[in-house]
Image (cartoon, rainbow, N blue to C red):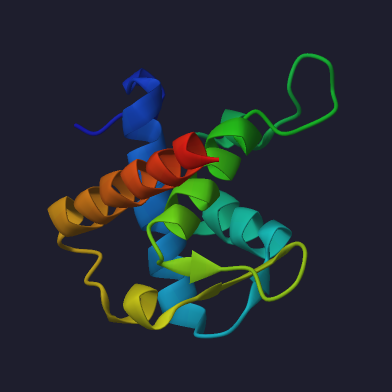
Length: 123
């Protein structure tokens, strides 16, 4: 049985990347981060409710670091973009990619990070 809380950090981020993509493909419009988090909290049966509670210092949700990293990964992969601060939307590629093909999404993310790191090293 799938248990999100027992996954290593990178697998949690992989899971969130797919969940975010699926939601954006459903709504087909730019959305705020809070909308995605609210949807995942209410509709994703695999994400424990504890992930949406405040962290130990009470400033952020426990899920926020992995959620933010998943968004960054999707952006580096060319699957989402930010038309405005705090707003995310699908690119053409993000709209076309099949979320059922997890290997393609994972490879796009890896490729995006390689390109990002290569460009960062050139600066």
